[in-house]
Length: 479
Image (cartoon, rainbow, N blue to C red; front, side, top):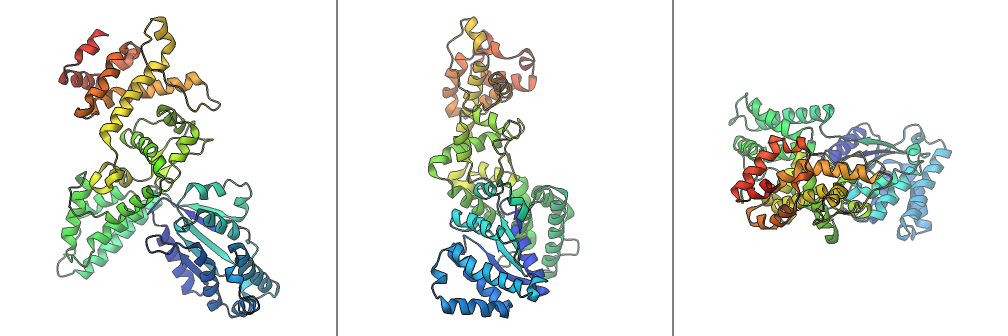
């Protein structure tokens, strides 16, 4: 079995479709099944019967075997999935293998795409286990899915890699960027041919192609959605559609009611968020806010959790449905590896309320949360020194997830991060929330800042100007 994993909309279905078509062309496609939640093809009970039916059409001898079995026992298709698979796939192909049927020398390919869109997570895992357990059969398997948590967990089994080869579809690597570039050139050529009366041979302008390619950054889904928008036959005006795309890409947030070239991608992102249990959504948004609003100030995943006062379980629970859009290190790697968004289109979606609606990041609240916590962590890290100076009027935050790491080292990491982002976050708090930060600033001992941090003009000067604009500079001068 080959298992292709990749983020949402990265082009897994296109890969599955292309491979299925190539194998069908030479007569080696046994069966295919494309799960799709939006198209209501997500019932796990339909997978095995569909594969059996398609295999029976291609392989007459196999058809004879299952026809007899179903005739002898009409209840087989009402049994559980494991029994169906054993009686209608495993045993018939073992029989063909024993008879040295030609299928043994040229095994047919079975393609299962969008496994993560099957409505039952237990069934998803069961299908993988069933397929990986029959590597001795004359069958080839290609499975495509997003890297959802429960599916990645299967691969932690030490024996898993003996029967399965995992291939990752990456974004932003050289091959992905070349694929996106080829797709752009090919589809623009088709559009130009279709609208030859409207478009010149030099359309589209190369600077527009470069703009789209740079923004796509190897994301085939993003590229495909943009091309679909430009070539929309109902509008019939690809040049105007292209101009809208370029403005959309370069202009930041969308206007209410404006055409959205990434509407299909936004629907996919909304679907992902709708799967997050409501009890975990607030925590997930806090984690995402810190990741997206401060992407250049890297924290390890463990430090990230501690900064937000989340224990290990709460941290991973909140992110369980986001593996297809967010790189989330395992707990064993969390002390060094951080979170990162697979593609900028996801960050843009969350920062634009016209696109994300109720899932938009509330930047005002997020900056306030980050500012207050940054001040508190700087005080917590210098707690002993402050006590010695009788400065005890502060909130000390506990470390929720230490593992085997030294607590003082963790606190110093959080202090260092907080000193970089805390004062910046204060400056970004919305005007109507400024009163909420005043108490924390009045109680904050600026003496905890290191000398080099006080001399960092890129941080200190904007903060002092912000204080002056709110007539608060006396807070700083008192220190």
